[in-house]
Amino acid sequence: MNRIAVFTSGGDAPGMNACIRAVVRSAHYFGKEVIAIRRGYQGMIEGDFELMKPHSVSNIIQLGGTILRSARSQDFKSSEGRKKAYENLKKENIDGIVAIGGDGTFTGANIFMQEYPDISMVGCPGTIDNDLFGTDYTIGYDTAINTAMNAIDNIKDTANAHDRLFFVEVMGRDAGFIALRAGIATGAEAILVPESKTDVDNLILTLGQSYKKKKNACIVVVAEGDDAGGALKIAETVGNKFQEYEIKVSILGHIQRGGRPTCMERVRASRMGIEAVKALLNGQKGVMVGVINDTITYTPFSKACKTHQEMKADLLEIAKILS
Ligand code: F6P
Image 1 (cartoon, rainbow, N blue to C red):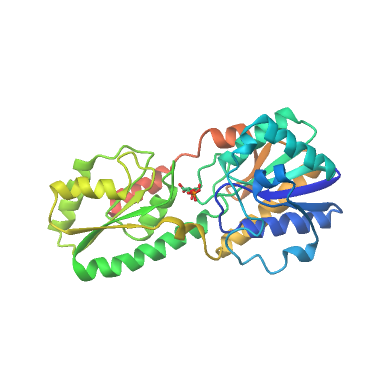
Image 2 (cartoon, rainbow, N blue to C red):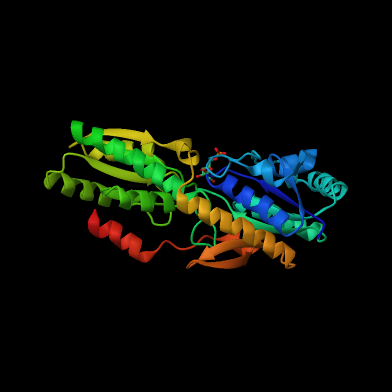
């Protein structure tokens, strides 16, 4: 292996900087030069590269976002775009890459490696959604659920002061992991996720029971990708049939993508970054590094992004029993 490159792609996630730092420092530790690619695949096509030294990643472990910036590149979807990217990598003598991102990133990596097998790519899972198969936790998820939890705690204060029913929408385009954990942690009355069909009549029944129990406020956490629509739509449907509480909607949005990574996030991202470099040096390619039951795993890109892990049945049960 000559030179190793690192980039971040897709939606940014807290902890990506810790992972970049780990890649740069461990590659140097093992005697390899590192090139950073800015703005993901788009930067690869445009040759937006920078030689990294160990000190280039000083003082970033605590920062949210990504110092390499990110993009969702349309140009990389065309074979001309990928050809340009390949030529730029060759010019820089790069033959190993650590890609930090989510399913779009690994889908792109898979196609690229089939076309250009002399470039080895290994992935680190970076997305707040936790929607990749082959890891218990993605980089960014732990911070995002804590951000969502803190925001919902604040909403509960005001909801209780005014006897209101709040629909709080959290991120998760295709997955309800943020909603499930943040909902349990805040004692939400109901949690709506894309993985299970939302029954609005049943939801109204649950809310009616809460009202009868004299709860003076209710929180319903809604994953953005829920099958019944987002929080606004569900709130409107419920509001037409259930008027016991005044209804409010709060969409947390991108607040969940930023902020300082938690301790677990930094440690996990550091571990994954080092393991990705080791995997490349050991001749692995086309795999995503993950952590399952605290053990490092490698999952082929095609499998990592085809589906995501199942929601833990015990967590779903906790949510049901405690609501
Ligand atoms: O993939 C992470 C994520 O934050 C999703 O939860 C969300 O749907 C999406 O990215 C938003 O992406 P963008 O910032 O590009 O609108």
